Length: 221
Image (tube, rainbow, N blue to C red; front, side, top):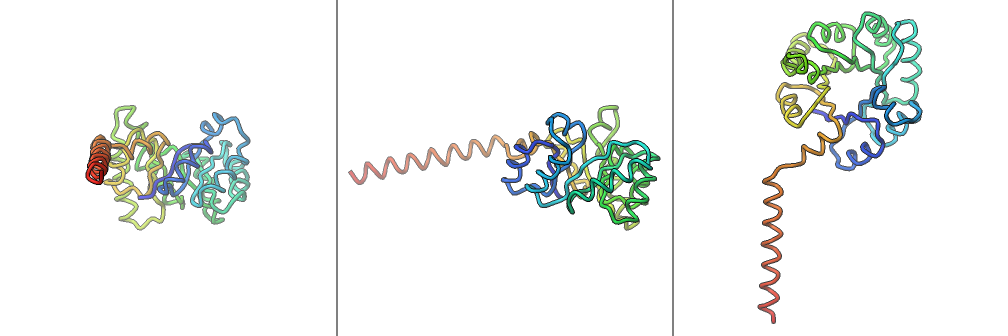
């Protein structure tokens, strides 16, 4: 399973990329707005850091406006995948963009029905917002599993992207469900490194080493 970092912060992306585990980046208008920077400039900065899929979202709501906006965004860099909303207008736009070979990420998907429509329309990635499904009493990970099974069964080229990840267990469950990609907040990726037994083991190893070095010094004396 590939790991994307879900952020528009250059500092976070640089740090996450230095760990060697990041395959791509997802952003959205809310994340970019928090940074207070020009959208295009920030996307190009991200493309210079990570050599992988970089998702940048359209903000137009009607297909006739969404398509030219998506074309412009896609032209910024070969790695840019244009995020298109799961709406009727979004699907109209996706039909055109897929025919033109533009790489896309259909966002705000909450059900298998929605994912199926996106896959049939040629989406590169289909982003299932599992955490938000959980928030309303549903089972977001079940939707991820359904999408993986159906895409495989029918041979769709679209990849299932587990989004709205809230904690490290979500990453584990998404991997077990067969998600092709999980896009994960920076803080959650940091938490993935952590385990109390790792900390205890490291402390013990260092303590044993210091004890051995001290005993060696005494023996030489």
